[in-house]
Length: 322
Image (cartoon, rainbow, N blue to C red; front, side, top):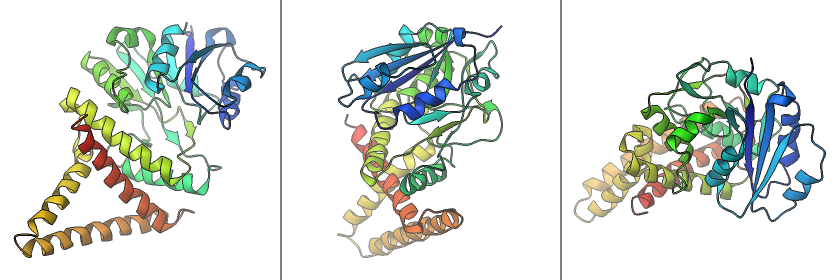
């Protein structure tokens, strides 16, 4: 027997892209009586509300308004109001595939608390956004989950909330999201779930198209706040930090230390120059390899990766004091 499922979608000022997301929800292959959509409009100042309430949708939905409480709290308000036994999360800038719900449900067993899948850059996204997706894909190679695309069903430490399903009972058991975190609140939630002995599963078959940051400013803000949130969650749970999280701030501190040491010896100028040369050449080679069969320009990719390393690192250093 199929379980009841609630799809929770938080949003703020998403009028331009909202219909794209909800039209995909309309096409979900799942019994109508077992599916509800919980739309949380978190303080939108555009015509998001009008689009939702004045459009005829073919799915059952709850509409909730909040006053700019933030995406973490908006998700929590949504799932607490939801009626389903399973809670699926996605975002307004995402387009789910027709079999998304069924694919997420497939790997669940008694000890599985959550199942998630890949978020893929759409082919019709803007050229710069597709380049952002390519850069995030590269940055996910060491083990990060920004744009991870594994090919097998397996246990994993975290699935982003743009494409994940939880047992509602487990969300309630662990106390939901930590709203004090600027970002990484979803990963911190998954950490606490795993500490309880539950499994989190990744499946490549539950796919979501995720439209990326459309300009440099939004991308830079994303990198900085991801780093800031990462340090916040690391201070709560030191074991959440992995080497690739700590590499950017360590690199920045090393460069700053070498700049200071230049006062004492020119030897440090040689060391600093060598490190920077290897860094620039290494990232540029990666950029050449990653962009050779894509529309993304090599210098754009090069800039995106370097900006992520720098701003993520700065964000983590700032997070030490916040």
